[in-house]
Length: 86
Length: 495
Image 1 (cartoon, chains in turn red, orange):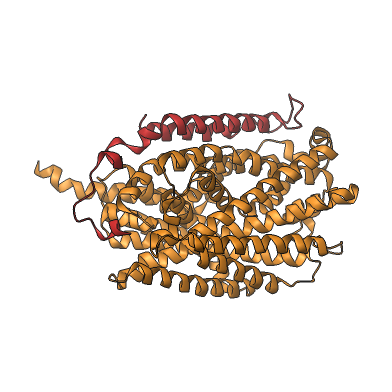
Image 2: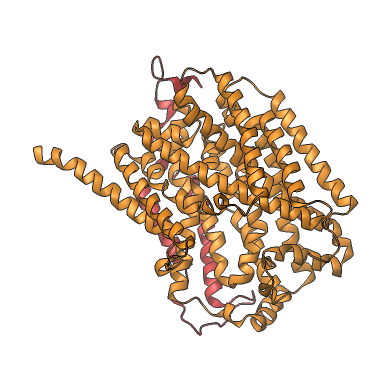
């Protein structure tokens, strides 16, 4: 998983959360939650998004970190910069 | 709550007073736990936070008083369209996922204190890091001012006028700056634990009590539908674009809040950071959605408040009051909720104050005094905290000043720093100069648009339903691409 691909998936969730395909006049309610269908749609996408975030944090953390930046793989720079002393 | 019984009676004042004493105690405890006199120890708690403290401090910091008060009011006015709110809070966590893993590893190796430290190290271009630092400080000043003002109004309202706005602002400001300068980030994070628990309990309590007392299905589908039938209609195209625009603006801008970035640096380990973010992913549902729900219930049970100035923004307090009137035994929960609002505001203000103080010390003071010792820098940081809090408290009390109005534009500005941080983490190929050019142009366009509008120019508030800051971001990215392309052209031609 690359950052760009993950970014695209996140954008897909954002787009899906907006009720694009519900036109004016579609104010019916299918469930007993007291919400109209289009709001229920957004609510369901929101729950899926939360589950995806938890999964993505577990699965793609290392991919987002990039192995080259792992401090365990790198020796401290000799002499160090002034920032290393903080 | 005008004309009604004060929420803070003697028992309530004792509860809030006890809470404030605990905060001061935690500040002292933070001071005793100090390991060294250094910027890292003072501003990042020695990079020692485990998953629980890290989660609580992230939670308490990102959910301000605006969450409990402002979001409910907005939900009251906008209806189901404000379902955008939990989504943008989730996008904040996604934003962290996109850049925090790599930024954390870099910070361990390089010892960053502020966001500007990272950009300076990555690109070595001082104008870029200073611009990011300045934009972050402007945004945080706004955050502090609006929250201080909300805090003063809340104290006056809740005490039934026994304490005035300025007294509330002054007293709580002194307490905040005291525990902050005593314990630094450690003190702030530990107080965030208490504040986060109160905040979470406050949200859960009001949601649970409303569902216990009323049938939410009936209130939403019968009362709300009768009071505001337009809420049941899906938004038109402009409304839908505005919905997406709100998610993008708030989600990405909040994800680069300077005090949020510093909490990434403050993690004890990668696992601590990852676990705390995993729990954070559910907080928009348990906090933001619950409060939005309270706003909808309020519109169903107490319609017609929009005609009274500022009344919709107090809907969560009205709802608690309604519960107490119907079931007097719930009085204690009302005090708890009030404590939660005060806690949410204080946890936001103290973190923002600490972050501005660190930026001033690390990014600006150190630039002119590079040979200052760590102990000297930490001391300067504390002095700056007192001066800053004094200035902010005065400005908040004089809230009608022009400065206050001008810096209302905050998230639009912060959004312009997103490309530098997100792209800077993942690629070294970009030049600091191109990122600076994009950020400067994006900021200038956004500010020009918003200032012109405030001065009365005939401009739409959101052109095509999109915030000015997002137009600025688009231009920002276009300029970055253009400058990069121009810089690479000669080398490509030479090949």
